[in-house]
Length: 166
Image (cartoon, rainbow, N blue to C red; front, side, top):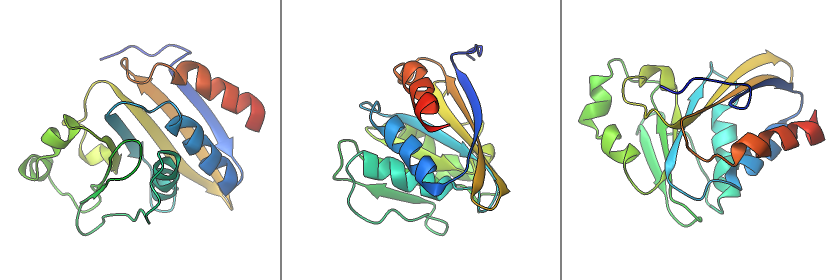
């Protein structure tokens, strides 16, 4: 597992929905290859909103909805296919093996996983983690971890976004 250094981790608070959307769009600009974004956070923390903005940033024009009951939704049509996985209803990690999540990770898409704490054993070592927390009316705590060698441009992109927006 990659060791974290100051260039791989950022923690901050956003105070408006527009900033969350802006951050997701900024991240989408550097996502040109398949990979995994693992989302952590409770109900109402903004995971689905962030994924919707990532999808829009990749050029997806359809409605991206949380697959709470279907577990997996795939969206084609953007610069990169988007697979949205919601592990909320998963009780045991083996269920994710049974639906082929490990194969989806090895595919051609950006895979966004909500409730990633329920899929820790399957998550690839190289991934982007986004931890969201509800901090009060319109405020969300954000912690971003860049693990491994995925999308290295984020090491400079995120600090630039922070300078402009916080």
